[in-house]
Image 1 (cartoon, rainbow, N blue to C red):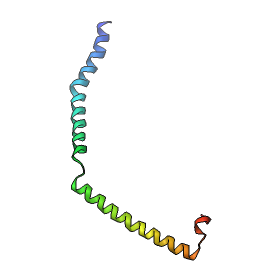
Image 2: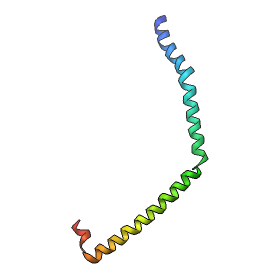
Image 3: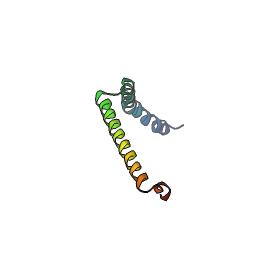
Image 4: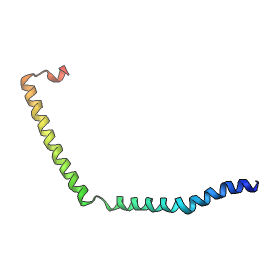
Length: 79
């Protein structure tokens, strides 16, 4: 291998190891730590709020389906 080829591989490798790799590792382990900590209080509250809204919407759909069943029993087949 010529000296130019060695530098062509060595310089990018050194830049990667000095600049990119440490930042990459820090961000990786920070995200792992966040995941292992679980949900925050805000996230839990938001999930509860969305679950409550989903139940309300489910009840509304059931009510609408009952009304449609009474008005037009074949509405499900008519598409």
